Image 1 (cartoon, helix red, strand yellow):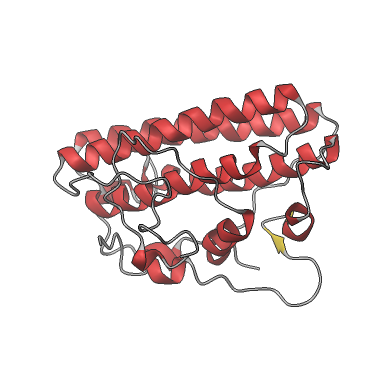
Image 2 (cartoon, rainbow, N blue to C red):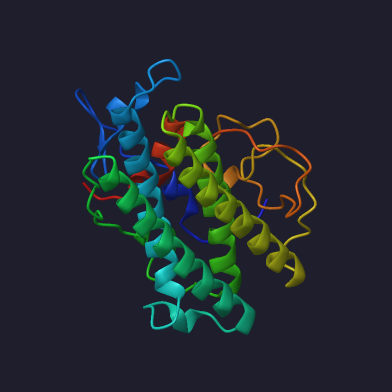
Length: 242
């Protein structure tokens, strides 16, 4: 198994909440956990969109740190890696804007960008380089794709579903592109066919990224399986200080 960065294990140690609603980056995760296929409604669509917006805020913030003029840009040296950081950062920013506009169009209130702390992932940044950046991206991207899949069947509004599907397609392209670049640079054989990337084979309940397998293929023949909101919460929780 590949270990992208020294502090990846702490990435999944979600500082769980006690009694009452679990709030994560402005999203009521307790309410979101109650969403169902049978209970489709406009409010449920708004809740799901805010959940997606939270994930896009995280991805946007991550890529912007490595994009042109980002605080961690100096950690990258390969021209292709820099280009990927720039392009994906722009995509994530567009996703944030699209989700915000869609939420408002439904009469909802979009969450504000929460405080995000990537220290659990990157530490002081001294060990970051092209390889570590791409490995982190290879961890983020399939999680985002599968998180969208986990909510798709609970959406009522056709326009919302179309918007989510269009973002999902771009995120899946990110996952494939990052993995292909990692393969070309010799960072991974990228030969694992799996439906639960980046989790290891048989590990659908595993949330410890030190056990993740980042050798998944950039051209999967297996259909990726949805990732539950609970699992996603465990993944991103440490990056959102309370």
